[in-house]
Image (cartoon, rainbow, N blue to C red):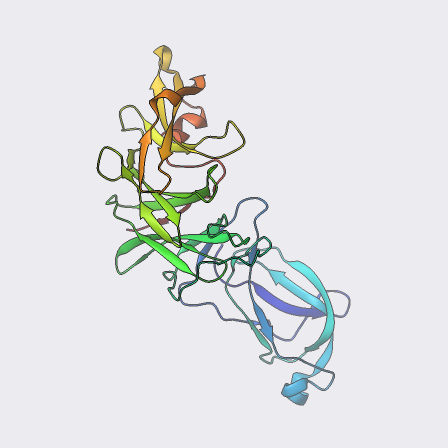
Length: 313
């Protein structure tokens, strides 16, 4: 969803709207918020304190008692009633404003040292909640967008810091990424892709590190059905934890597929990685070509992580 919700006072015990709705204060290019089931978004409502005399709006307000708010999310035809008995303006007066929707920091702050700076997200970015990457106890926000013709993926921490990767991948169209905390304490990995190539990063000490292959060069995965064999990047979900995996589809006779996983081991300093050939397993054998796990194994995704994507053309 994107933009500001519609917020109005209602009263008379029957949902009658009182006065005008709150004005939208959304920017020219508001963020697009991606939500999974159970996720939440928020918008900030600011308004004048009204009393029975109209408060600072005086008699022009035509104050009357409200039962609460009617809130309609962006792009929705359904609204919800939020009980909040108070005085409101019955006249068409400007009484408040509401911001565009945004993600909600979730968790309990631990009083650590969160990542903070003064950088800004690109306007109109696609955003979604991600994990607590700076270990301050609060879930952070990831985004995918563009600035000055360059695609960016990044993290906005709950404390307000913005950290970006200038995407070096050259594919046209959709670029995206995802970020997860792995089984290793303090280890956070990010994978970005352009639907042809995926590139691995490590996030630590409030910055992204481009992971290099131990044999030289950037650590990248060829992904998509045209890769030979069709390959991708995934997360290990066998032990209740998360580790990065190289995924591959291997075709059997009769047009069926095995999904093969190989563990990608990232060094302790987050700078290099290598595939552990001794860890290769057949994760799912003998799948039909139409099984969604076949297409999933040829892309870049992590079952535990929301992926944010944005077009660059």
